Length: 143
Image (cartoon, rainbow, N blue to C red; front, top):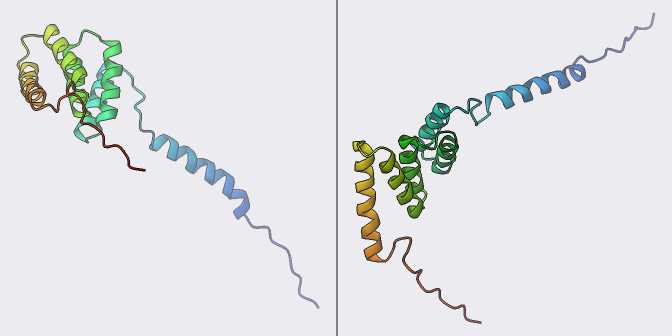
């Protein structure tokens, strides 16, 4: 009697799509970098975390979002000043420090940070390397 061969269908092709969809969903939910809580406190906390990790542009973005929700918060203004300073936007840092001091002149940590910044800022101005200093002349390319 000849051997009977029954063609078996592989289960593998039917599992690929559901497994791939589940993996994609988990990757999307697990790796989302932006917080879902957009409250002032959440933006401030996430901004501070990004600053500690050295992601100053992200920190600046979060502090700006928090400022839009709470424009009279001295702590947010101070955080903005530090972030602006870290990314090299010293004129904006100066304005943010002044605003923070206007909102909370009694806060010693804001006054201390501002004093350190002002010392750096004036030294850079005197040395001609500050934001208002004229740029060094660029060499002309030779043909």
